[in-house]
Length: 378
Ligand code: MG
Ligand code: ZN
Image (cartoon, rainbow, N blue to C red; front, side, top):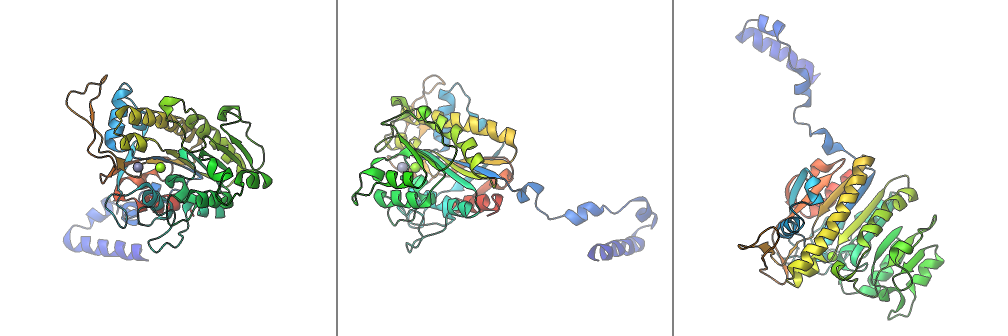
């Protein structure tokens, strides 16, 4: 009815002000009137699968350094949709990884140290929990311990990030379909003397660890969950022989796809880019970022072929105030840091796949949650 009224009004208007021939010769562009103001089609997109990659401490400085150190190319350059997010926590301008990851997992600003809890320490429901409720499969791979702040904020609810025994118990109760990371001792040498590995095995999990096998020697089970603990505490830096981030991430995709016909949510963290920043060690930063970038390449190959997978790469914050200064060449970077901790600088977001356009622009870190939730139709 509105459209009809508009056409009558336009006809009337035209007849008064112009010759009525005008109306006869030129049709009213009805489509553009009907669609004016609607969002672009991609904003309504839903993806079956989401692969969310967090480069802890990965700012533009780190990306630039790794790109030049790698012969002026990165897989990150394949993305065409790019945004920036603001990282501040509820209590501090400079966030930590716990508040930063809880912003992604729950869509709230909370205090530094908070794992999946609000300022008042009450639990917030996470994307991984929502995905599980929707019967999607859920997996996570990290180069820190699997109970470290970034992965923990997706499945755990604890008032302080250092409560590793409690966080490991939360993991066992959450039951991700797939997890790979360090921190074995928080599962089998705990203050409460419980053995969470045995407990999970009794519930159908296949759980391997670095002491018995390399990750690549593991056969992934046809049924039940899968976990692999890559170190007793923190895994090694890649430069010292850690070798599982790519293989564990690539193996996660078909594993999770087989576990549910509703799709999957996979979190992949390049955890130690941050540790290189804390150590003010440019080579550490670059080697960790290149390890992470290899994974990004393989994930993008999958998403391109699949067509139903959203890939989002971002950081929780920048670490170290990394920059390459005068005197740098492509073959020999001179790196300076302005801090041994995180900085407030905005960090980039890269997106590819259905719903990727939502990630353009400048926004709060909490909006990553809103955007992912909407694309996952949760
Ligand atoms: Mg982290
Ligand atoms: Zn850090």
